[in-house]
Amino acid sequence: MAVNFTLQWDSNSDCDNLVLNLIYPDHITYEQHFKNTIMKRISILLAGLLLPLGMAVAQKYAFVDTEYILNNIPNYKAAQEQLDKQSEEWQKEVEARYADIEKMYKDYQAERVLLAEDMRKQREEAIINKEKEVKELQKNYFGQDGALFKKRQELIEPIQDEIYTAIKDLATENGYAAIFDTSSGTSMIYTNPRYDISDEVLQKLGYKN
Image (cartoon, rainbow, N blue to C red; front, side):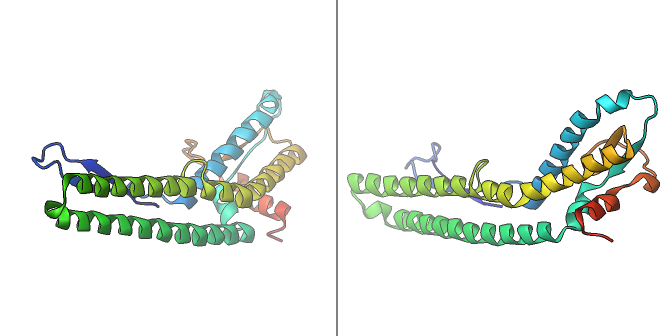
């Protein structure tokens, strides 16, 4: 998870010194975030597919655990490892850029009293511009529509679509009125393992005998 650095003016200071603030976001892994996205999407797709069937007189129900399914798909693990490696490389690049900015800031603070007014402004503007550049780079890598997100879509969405297709086929073949996902956050007080078809989904995908 990327660390954000913010440069801002300290309005309470008599000298209007430049203050470097480090902002650490909540620790939420990209893997867990994307797993949640997959689970929600599959649940929504299944709800749209199976809602009309729920009106049938003879109703059959089942459930799956998409997190269990994902963890038993080798291609998913390989894709996640590739994404983690790429994320780590980009993270190191961003952190190195921020380290350079911090050094520029410390050097400026040490030399500030010796600088003329116009030189101080130039140094301050240089630091702020560098920070803007790194923030843009960070956004391009880790933003909502950044390179990491697009790479995840490229590697993970095909697997997600395969899972959905396998669940849909099982629903059609076995006449299920609804298939619930226990990993999607749906409130379920009790589920009978007899109706867990997660292994059947994996068999359908060719990952279990």
